[in-house]
Image (cartoon, rainbow, N blue to C red):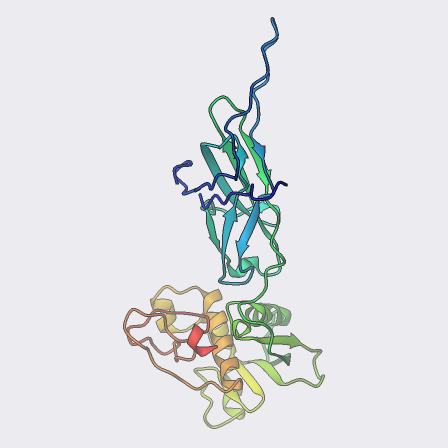
Length: 297
């Protein structure tokens, strides 16, 4: 690649996407087209890239990536960017910038750019990839936990609780966003805390402060009420929250207590509720939210 010939399309006039092109130094316009051969229809010429298509920005959860599209000779007059997670198109991600989501962690992001100009063949090019997308915050510590069930639950698939609670603790939107990672150990192995799914009648046995109605945390035991796990809570259901989001919320809330977080209230009506708010009981005008807010992490 010749020095100074990389232009950044940050997607304006080109297809309405804001692809602004900085002409390379010494650009001399369109190349001379080949002479026509009698009886033979010449193939449409192509736009020549003057370097690789790259990405600028932080390859981490909640980071913003910008497509940096190389200058084409001659200058392209239309263009379209489609972002990919690895090699799979991300639905709706067609702008010049892309906000990294929790689904991208552990994958590489790249884009396909399609460029064109009247009289030239349209061409598609795959950009260079990002590094593997990481968490919003580097790992600060690892907390181990084991999983068990307390009480008789006929027909219940115990491992479903282990898998779904593990998904919550591994999600980059959770406590992991603050640098705390979780590692599950074998049952009975030494761990930092035990995540327990207990039938309602078993809750008071952990502490007089534990109710048959709700989940609680006592010492190293983080206890999820089986009734709440299966049915969520009346206020959550009245607001049409999903059961999966309730499960995320209740695990994050009770594990938050183990991490040293106490209860907090609604900051203002209409705001997302802190995960350490007792959302199972009500919201005081806040909106349901299953994940720790930035200020809680």
